[in-house]
Image (cartoon, rainbow, N blue to C red; front, side):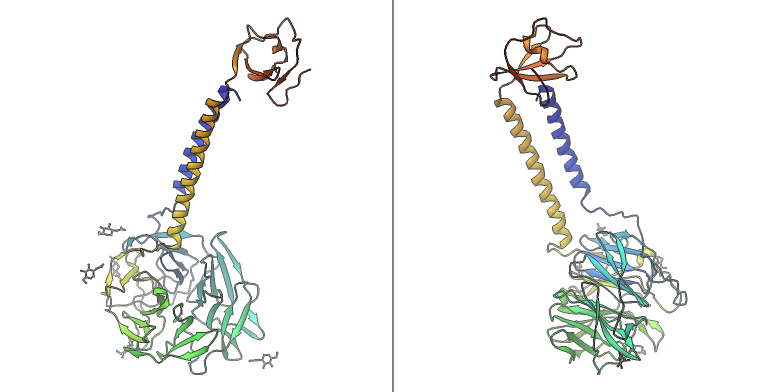
Length: 445
Ligand SMILES: *[C@@H]1O[C@H](CO)[C@@H](O)[C@H](O)[C@H]1NC(C)=O
Ligand SMILES: *[C@@H]1O[C@H](CO)[C@@H](O)[C@H](O)[C@H]1NC(C)=O
Ligand SMILES: *[C@@H]1O[C@H](CO)[C@@H](O)[C@H](O)[C@H]1NC(C)=O
Ligand SMILES: *[C@@H]1O[C@H](CO)[C@@H](O)[C@H](O)[C@H]1NC(C)=O
Ligand SMILES: *[C@@H]1O[C@H](CO)[C@@H](O)[C@H](O)[C@H]1NC(C)=O
């Protein structure tokens, strides 16, 4: 390698280091604070504690206007934000509109199951693609296309459960969606009413699905091992409702029920209730300031916070406006608040950021070591003697006319670098001894 190529390669190394660092900086998540989703009611939602809340579809304002949206977005739960500007991020639109149906994430959060009428889909976050699940019938059971279904994922098996998700001749069954996207059926409890319910969430702490029958207020659990059981709950038991939110918090050791619709008063509900799974006791939190409550909201629990987005504030057309569509409840402080604070424990998103930072640091160090090693090598290695062509040794006859410089090892002992000046030069006397040329591909005789 000539000195010129060495300088060039050194510059290239520095440039590659700088570009690697820039690439690493640009690959850390950045949120376009300018994006604001259209406020919807009856959206499908799913979340990962400390990571993200995903929201799909819904309708605008009026319950009479059944134009289902295909809007998809997320709220970042790994960073802090205020209700006036949640950390929104737009995601590609769904192929069809969705409204008030079952939705759940795979345990790794890489795929999102969502049901719409008689069809069911999987969204793959990596490829940003929606795929229709191959078959939505099992035996003579078909998907229940009624509104208000909910879904929950068993993190141990990856099976997604949709209570009342299958129907056959008036009978209702639980839909089981396997990780391979095939479907199965399981029985519902004979003790429960036949109304579909969106009040379903998984309690990892209990290794069970928790189901609140909205029409009666009864609470049930389902586990693959023990089947259905009615829970002997106590405390301030939430009165019956519809279109409520129900999510698991603190790894499912507490379950949160919020809002919904009061059919007697024909208004949306503004109360929040927490079921402690170890004592099976319901407690009620303070109502949030708006008199008008929320029904059909998208919900999540992350760290000490419960989050509700969108929904309707009453039965009449209400445009919530994106700025006040989000509600945050502090479960530790037992108060509605304006700020969401991400949980301190390393979340999957944070550890990913950390992994990127670590690999950047490792890559940077490796590149720096390579540069240092190369410089050391250059210093240590014998520098070729530079010979002006105007006074060349006899071997210059073998000089490649197209190359700007070559290194030749004369008699395998000494290295020479031949530099070509502007003018072509051929020596008068050919060499009389053998030699090797360091430039690969260069032929000599
Ligand atoms: C939230 O609002 C408070 C008060 O206006 C402000 O100090 C804080 O920086 C905001 N936080 C974020 C994450 O925007
Ligand atoms: C489902 O189909 C089978 C025959 O394939 C029949 O025996 C059974 O009664 C059907 N079940 C219902 C609930 O319709
Ligand atoms: C609905 O309103 C009725 C009448 O005020 C009340 O008794 C009932 O508790 C309310 N239900 C809910 C869920 O708030
Ligand atoms: C949302 O904001 C608008 C305008 O600031 C206000 O009129 C409306 O009442 C708010 N809605 C809620 C639910 O806070
Ligand atoms: C908890 O609530 C009290 C009063 O309700 C308030 O002063 C305090 O700042 C709150 N703490 C947090 C962390 O929000």
